[in-house]
Image (cartoon, rainbow, N blue to C red; front, side, top):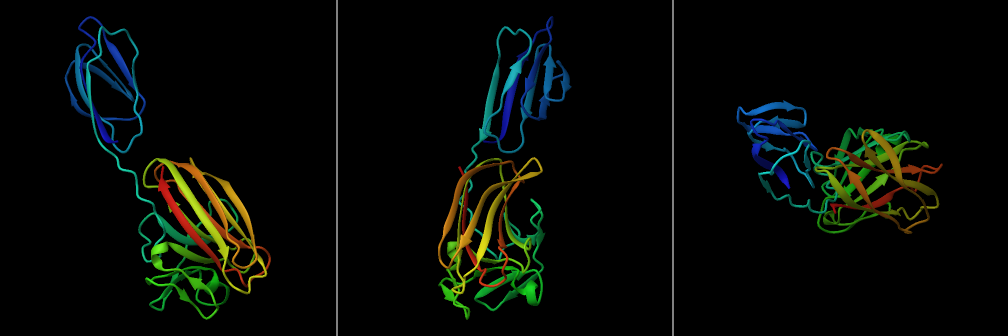
Length: 269
């Protein structure tokens, strides 16, 4: 539900002040003078009338009369809150929930990639212009049909929401894709990792991390070995609005054949 409103009448009486304690912050839309106190998440009144709005999206609200009351009289209303549609990355849009960057193996480290190249078919966002920086990157097919490049790497059509991630040259040079929640809730999360360079005789570490109250923790660690052998993480992750999930790849000691296809799907449960 979105922006729920509670309307209370006859809180307490002239001889008995009654407090009501709420589970979350509110805004006062109307307050009759007989509401004697508003303190944090508590209102108190002697025959009081008040209208409260609870901004944002909520799964539940609760309140408690903390003194004896003859009867409770209130009206409740809210807009419905639709579940967010399933989300997949679109590399042509960096203003939404998905961001593309790099960092170290320190949990939560993230810097947006700074350089973009686009040949009209494959768009690549990378850490730098040449050498390690050129291939330390995320790339996506921006057309409606699969494309195979000169390195025999196939990029599925854009509509599939698939990225090709390539880590940096050294251990700890991680390529990262960040998803940030637009609402508080439980999210169904899946990512299918596949080494797609047909020279892939190396291994890649693929991890999923989640943020909670500013602290990062690992959700999944998979070691990818061998060409075209997909491995999948699927799970449910609880996020507050504004918290993020990081999807990361890191080479496992060799730089070459590390192109990793990642097929994402994130949706609110």
